[in-house]
Amino acid sequence: MQNIWNYISNLGTTGEDKQLSQKTIVLSNQLNFVMLITMLLLLVYTLIGQRLTHNILSYGTLRVALTLLLSFLNLVIARYGYTKLSRLSLIFLPSIVFLLGPTLIGYVQEEEFTYYPYVVIGISIIPQLLVHPHKEKFLYWFSLSYYFLLVIFIDRIMVHFGKPELVESFMNSYPIIERINTFYLYYKIAQIALFLFINAGIFYLRLLNFRFEAELGSKNSELNLQNKELKEQKDEIERQKDELISKEISTWQKLVYIISHEIVNSAIPITNLAGMTAQMLEDESGVVQKPEKIGEEVTGDIHHSLRIIESRTRGLINFVKATKSLTDIPKPNLRKIFLRDLFERITILYSAKFKETGVKFEKEIIPPDLFFEADLELIEQVIINLFQNALDAMEEISDPRLSIIARKNETGHVQISISDNGKGISDEVLERIFLPFYSTKANNSGIGLSLSQQIMMLHHARLEVSSTINMGATFIMIF
Image (cartoon, rainbow, N blue to C red; front, side, top):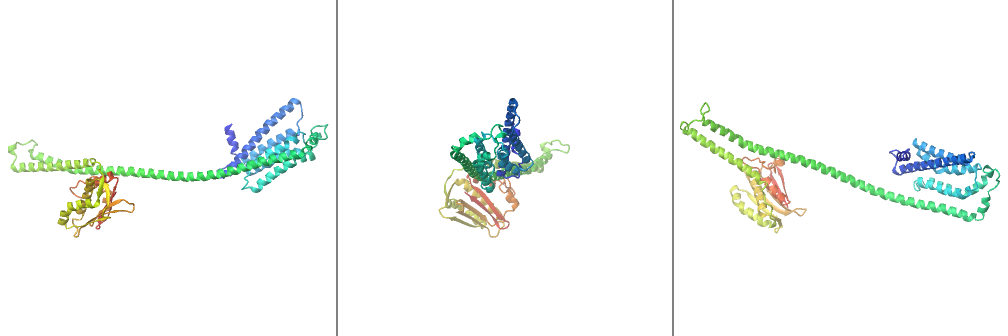
């Protein structure tokens, strides 16, 4: 039954219909279907009653059948897309087929004088439901005027056209009219008042409904916009997540490559040298020679080879220890640090080195009493690492200059900038510069910058770098 109701309700609707138009079509179909079922039940009841009483078919039965047929035709034309015609038919034709038609041919029953006006009042609800009072003003007021006039004049039309003999062969008048005429004015005023009250109430409720629908539509638009923004944000988060995962995988791949490269670079010479040393102790057949058969020169070579193996092995051990140091950074002990004290410690530490290498060193603090909270020793270690890298980058520079400047940036964060005029850093190196064990210098573990970055992260701070080839580099510590 639910499927039938849904099918009937959506007759003639398309995806191109506006929301209000589609609602009107659905409601029109539903009213036609309800009227069809009502008339069908009434027709069955009437036919059964006439069958039991052996009465012949009357005009009353015919008008029920015609109204049923009208409802069916309305649904058929709606099914083929003529929804406007179906709606107009539902607004005007039921009153004509059921009331005016039989009345105009003279078929008027006496009891109809008591209920016809109220049937008209009931049917007048149909245009209220199906016609928009603002967008279809003419049709709205025309249909209500039509029903209002019917309420006023339906009994007069019945008196004028009614033929009692069509209903009862012995009647030539309607006795009920004489009784109604004694209070006709109050009778008609009551009907008009009821018509106006019902239609005014429905009109007001529809206006409220339109207002609420407009507000709901506005809220839905806002929610749709917010949902769209949330979806875009979700997609962006997913994209960034995928990008982070990709970068993480890439970082681990680079890390594994660097570690593998360092270990292999140390292991291969050790293996080769160990093999050569073993061969020095063997004769041509591969048998180990007695000590007295090994000359002093070979013994010296073996000793030298073992020392090299020891050195390379120690270097490999130190590399592994440096790797472990990345996970052994202590938790920062935060305290108030004045930049002037920090800079003074660094200056004293490096003054001899600057004098030796001829580096022109500059420092500046804006304002002079600038301070921040951090672990003094850990931050000092970061600056030492950055200074050492800067000195290495300026080894072949004729006029080396190094500066350290502290100030508050535009967002209120303390910013320490360390700049040199060295050879600079290429874009390729910048991409990997903070990777553990990555270094462009020989005999360097590549731990310093990675360690510095982790120290900054433990302070909820960040370390940034910018550089131009042959013009130097600038590392910025932002707290």
